[in-house]
Image (cartoon, rainbow, N blue to C red; front, top):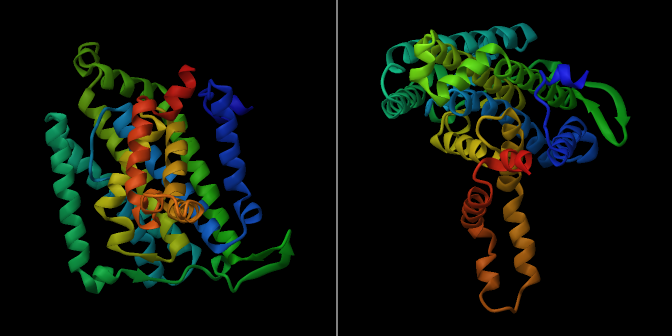
Length: 350
């Protein structure tokens, strides 16, 4: 049963299986295990970024395609839901229309970019995607009448997903309200999309992508149209990234250039792929979990550590909470040094 659900792609490591199982249980029961606004928000972000990173790994890890436009597709999905809920009203039909339109627009845009750009060498394709993503980000910022500009859009989700909606009193001390339902919409949606990506990479289509990544000339020689497969992978990756953006918008009830289109998010995606391990969907789970947790809690941990070493020369200054980005960079360098194939690659090899 589990093998069928995972499309035959088993962890192949008892430690990795244990870690993945622990992450799944923690995310599935996050509102009950870690009650609190910040912890549940962190869990929701992990769910969304797992899907976003998995969709990007389809390009980079499986197809060998370097793109800097992934946040653009992410933002298209988020703005699609935001605009639909703003103009159609706060109904589930608006969410479906917005998410579907966003995914379709992202796939069409990816098709146009891929069709005209994937024939060139990888570095030129990466530069083209960076230019297009930058242009879209500027356009979104300037179309303030439609997108809210730099201020973004704040909108209302269906009443059933709002904190005012209640469907019971309490369960294990957790209020049964719309915010809880909203979290499980994000969690279940992310789980379905991740399993879909897992199925894609373990299908014949995914095997061909891996062959193209290893040697595109040989894949072309034995009859596979390399450009077609790369364009198809780009479109699929863009559509899934847009759906991840839709889930993110539902959770935040706000979209803006900084939350969906910024280059910082693109860098985070790259870091997550490298930390988790390229060419494995499970790497998206590990990478997204580690980096999101570090971004949310490393500063607090450093503050506690700094208070414990007060009076010791130099250490309080090094462990100052304001230097958390420095230590995040150090942790990334160490992870690359000790896990050159990512955490998943290292665990599977051991």
